[in-house]
Image (tube, rainbow, N blue to C red; front, side, top):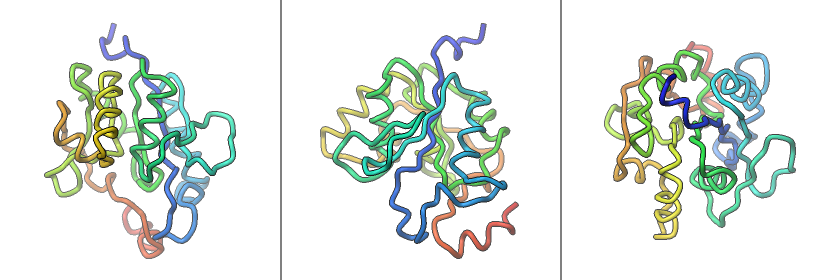
Length: 192
């Protein structure tokens, strides 16, 4: 039996941001013939025991959603809220603004997963720092992330640089490309 599968793996589609730079909700942009939130959800279903949408506290409640439960802006809220929901599972987070993440990207991260670390993630596109939003967060990170937040910190990247994380180089750096602005969206077809 694969030792990594002894710990349930849940998926979290990070879509709770304000999308201010894009000017419209990035979760509903279409790159693959469907809203990106649905594409990522279905992608994670192939690898995870359960999958949830991470939404901000103002979003309407729907099936398979976890609302932000902390008074802070940013993706750490979604990660903390997921662990508040279930702290005994590992969570793989994928943001809706990385449309080039595909099955091979997820499989590569899973193949390099180290359950003895608090997290497994890719180096960012510069190859120097962690890419914090495309990450497997082990159950051990739940308490550490909460303490990090309670100490006034909110950057998942900062957490990963100081925690016992495993960083790997993505097989295709293009997969880490964020689409945050209308001009990024317009250029997307050139990235494929």
